[in-house]
Structures are given as structure tokens and as C-alpha cells.
Length: 297
Image (cartoon, rainbow, N blue to C red):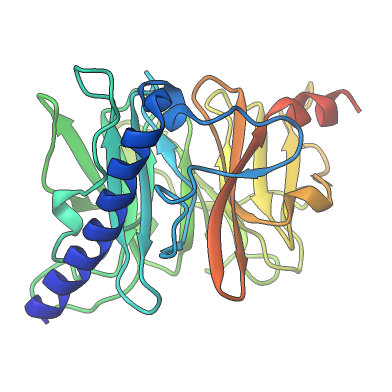
């Protein structure tokens, strides 16, 4: 198993590194934000082709540090454990070669999500809590200590004690939104909310029927201030907080947004999501102006 993991990592790193070096030779704009790409308009475009969106399979969106100088994402060859990659802007202004973060080199890691202040990273993993323990999907967290990511630890049983799945989201208070088919769901997977209070999580609750239905809701993204929520239900849907602080009836964002795992950049300018199909799983990005358009409508 250890040899297999090492081989997978070598294959992943070699492909990404070679492409990034080639990009640096041919495209000096890699000193700019978002790997120097042309910024998207109202039509979704593949994000960072050959660097983030590659011939490996992405399984979630990206996550960006508050200052925009670090990007994290998860990918792996088909049918192999996913690893979390990262790249950052170096002192010379160039983006670093993508690397596998240390705590997913020997264990899987998926769906990285940074806290609003960039001091915590939440991610999904099937690793056991204790050596020899049961492997199943749980949410883990790593703290950034003096600029370095520490040893991950699982969230408590109020979150991980029952079924949950795929990408989560965290607001500025530390409260968590996630998809789950646990008790209390209104159909299949619902979007659940766990308030963070007094340094612990309250019992997760299924959001109201304006969000959840008898269908499958998953992979939420919540605005840091809790003003809107984007999630997947056969494409992306969005709900806004109304004057009474309730979630409005969710509306579908349109055919262009036929994906999962939504994420909005910290500056609020760009919406990212994952598109999945036969032979590809790629991350797309688009202007986040669609959010205000839908709010005003």
C-alpha cells in the first residue's frame, strides 16, 4: 500500500510540475493572480487548464487564501485516493510548483476549505480516527501554526457521528454547512447547518423547505456573512436571506451552471464550480455578477 501511494504521488507531481514549468517558460503572466489567466466574463471557462484542471480528476472546487496568494484543490488519477494540492505566490512573484500537502501524502484528502481568516483548513477524508479503525468519510481540520499546517484532527461526533458527504462550507462565525442523508432530512441528502457556539458545534439541523426538498441537495457554499447560499440540486441553485433573516425560496441559477461544489473567491468577484462528465472532471470559473443579478430579480 505504501509503495502504491508513493507511485501515485510521483505520477501526479511529475505531470503537474512539467506542465507548470512549461507554462513559466511560455507565459510570464504567472506572476499575476489566478496563475495569470485571462479573467472570465459571464460564460464559465475552465480554470487553470493543465495546472488545476488536468487529465487527473478533480472532485471539488478550489479554496483561496484571504490574500489571494494561495490556492488549494484536490485531484487524483481515476480510481485512486485523492490528494490535496496547493500552490502559492513566492517571493519572486512566481506561482510555486503544485505540491501535495503533507497530511495527504500517505492518506487521502478531498474538498479543502479554508476558514475566512485562513487559519484553518477543513477537508474530507476516509482515514480512520485511530490506527486500524473504520474508514469512512469524515470532516477533518488542520490549524495553521506559525505559517505551517499542523496535524489534522477530526471534528466532533456531533458532526462526524452520522453520515455526511462531499464539499462543506464555513461562515465567518465558524458554523458549518454540509450535505447529509442523516436523520431529519426531508428527502435524500439535505443541506444541514451546525452552529458554532462556545467553541463547539450545536446539533446539526436540516435547513428549511425553501432550501431542501425531497430531491438531492449537496455541496453548499455559504457567503461568509450568511447573505446567500449556493448549493447543488441537479445544477446550482441559490437562496438569499430575506428581511426576516429567513432563507428565501431557492431559484435555479441557469443552464450554464450545470455543476456541483460552488465556491466564491474571497474578493467576491468569481464563482467556481465543478463540472463532471464522461472522461472529465474539471473546475470552471465565471464572473460572480450572476449572484447580484439573481438577487435583484
